[in-house]
Image 1: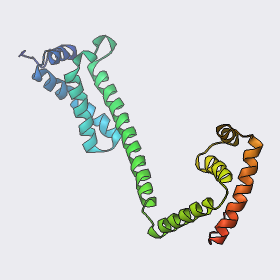
Image 2: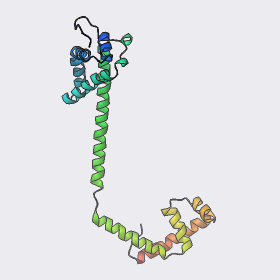
Image 3: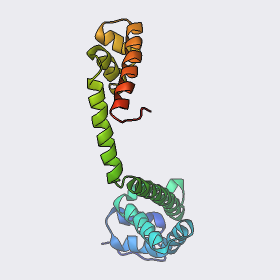
Image 4: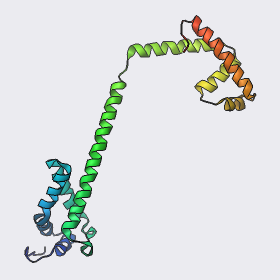
Amino acid sequence: MLYLDERTLEDAELVGGVADRDESALAEIYRRHGNQVFGLAKRVIRDEEMARDIAQDVFVSLWKKPEAFDASRGSLRTFLLAKTHSRSIDVIRSESSRRIREERDGLLRADSVPNVEEEVWQVTVASKVRTALATIPERERDVIELAYFGGLTYREVAVRLGVAEGTVKSRIRSGLSRLQESMGQLGIAAV
């Protein structure tokens, strides 16, 4: 361990001590700059506990990576305060994002509460639509299934089935007309 004369050592020498894993050097840096680091974090964050965490992060960061400080670029105080400000802004952004996520997730969870009656109705309607689809001719059913349930365009359906695009359109029109009739007979109002 190095013996550190608190009155004569410069901050750069103290950082050198930190690089040599001298805990007393870090303690002296904290004694000299801890209040300013904490004060800045508290002013930016406006939360004392978070400000303490940020100050601790700044000094732990210096302990882990003392070579990040370059005395030729400015004072240690400036370096520590810049890290404090940057870390504080990161925390604010992170907290803001977390709150937005939690609010959004809360809304999604509230919206996703299953409505058993609605689900039963949807299953019943889906079953009747399948029954109604089974009553129309296969060539009309195929184009409707590919276009509406498969998400294909008229052109893609035509290519897949090897027929003209106009044929696909007319089969869909006649198939939908038959489907509407069949659904009416099954007691489902067509939308």
